[in-house]
Length: 61
Image (cartoon, rainbow, N blue to C red; front, side):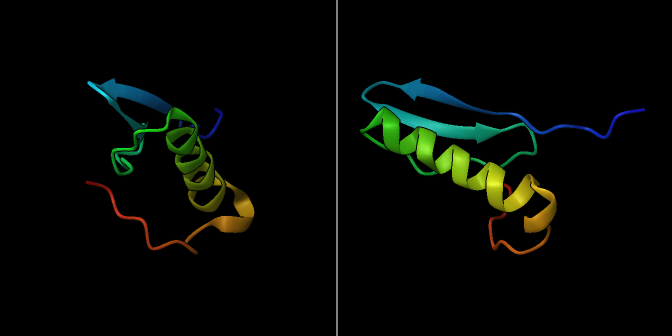
C-alpha cells in the first residue's frame, strides 16, 4: 500500500487566495495568487518531503 500523499491547492475567497493542504494546514489569505501558490509549495516541501519531516513549525488550523 502506498503512503498517503498530501495535496496542496489554492482556494479563492473574494479578492484573496488561500493555500490549503489535505493534512489540514492552510496559509494566510493573500491578494497575489502566485504568493498563495508559493505558500503551498513551501508547505509541501517543508512538511511532506522526506528531508523536511518534522522540521517545520506549521500547525493545522
